Amino acid sequence: MEEDMIDLSNVTFIIPLRIDTDDRLRNIILSTSFLLNNFDCKVIVKESDEMKKFELWALPTIKSIADTSNLIYQYEENHDDHFHRTRLLNEMVLDAETDIVVNYDSDIILPISSYVTAKEMLDSHESDVVYPYRFGERGERKVVLNTHIEDVDDLDALLKQPIVQEFVATWKPEVLDQSYGYAPHGNGEGWAEYGMVQFFNKQVYMDGYLENENFIAYAPEDVERHHRWSMFGYKIGRINNYAYHMEHKRTPNSHYSNPFMTKNNQLWEYLKGLSHDELMDYYEALDYVKEKLK
Image 1: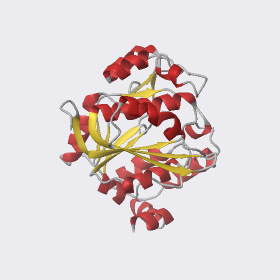
Image 2: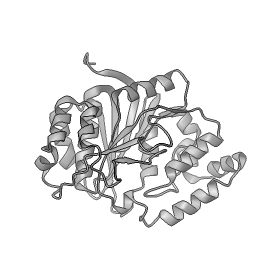
Image 3: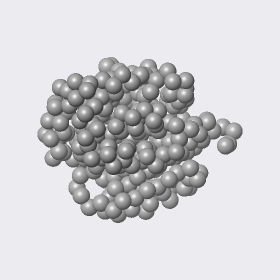
């Protein structure tokens, strides 16, 4: 491990990926390279798409600015319009070989201290899961880099934005504050109380039935997951800080307009009405639980 790298050697970041917009390409390059340049950790990127966009468009650039020896790239060919994020996360959790796994959106950067604090909270068993941002206030999410590049093939344009260049030169998250506020959310802040990124004790994550694969595309799987862990009595930790969310265009796979939204909401309404024992019985009967966890 290099002297200036922070030891997160018992941590694996799992990033489900579909590069569906130009700025998503920029974001996966920056988020992955940031992790690899700051931390001694493992990173798994699993891409589900009709072609290997990450390997073709992102990986060469990442290799030019980061040591990729701890990066694991997985790919499945998938021509479906919808992105089955929950299933991909479950597959990556099972592939991870560390005690801590991090459900990590491709568009997220945290203050350096939050990564360290979250790891310490899990290592000490103070928490079973950690949300590394505050709850219930506008300001848990700083929306940054809200400058859309129209040509997905123009990587030079993606990476020559002045703020991006400074970020790559320093790998300091606070550089992103320069673009804070250029957001469609008004002042750049937004609600994201259960999504974005969570640090887990891997065994507890598995004991709690992982992600519910009946939620497809976008929302509200993150809300249901938090509710479930609360029902099961898990120790849920919070860090009083914020997350940087690098902005991206909204496609159906990252918006409430996705065609599975009605079904997803109906499932959530059903699940939140179950008792502890009923919820346990529901999960024990699911096919993915029987296949992956038994």
